[in-house]
Length: 239
Image (cartoon, rainbow, N blue to C red; front, top):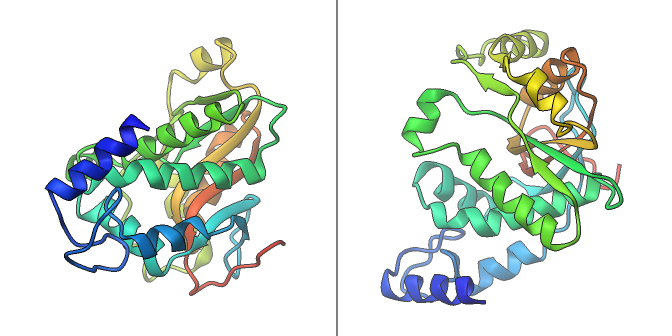
């Protein structure tokens, strides 16, 4: 309650355009107007998959399509450094995790890693931040949750001209398993339902690459949870 109040006060003192729709001179709550808050709260997580799906693409739940207020909020968070949106977006991400992870088992969250350059540009790891808020939300709902990062990301060359197989190879080659993976296993933190988290799924190459790297390290992935899925590749609600 206190956090929500402080958030609303900050929005009143430091007014700006709504992150969801761009409306100006309206009351904001965590950066979004009343209409966009209602639209975001109305989203219901569902299963999604790009068409065609790359080899190894996991069972994936998305909060909604990459459009409207969700797209606006994500862009404002990632590209305009409106980090206060991390909390509501993280809460939405928790809903996607809950749709793929059973409540009666420990859950291990693995955020898709950012490159060092992306972390510098965005003043931190945007997915680690979102996943942290999702973890706290899930804990408050009774889940046993841990977040770990066994991967690091290297710069990836432009893959626009590549076919699906080429994009997957490029994504796999950009990921490295941390040398601390053995320590994480001995600590018991890898046991449970392993869910990969990401912000947007488009071709599915990144998620498939993350799953391949994790499974090469003997970490069985249950599924993935993402905030948004592009409609360019199609989705399959309830599939």
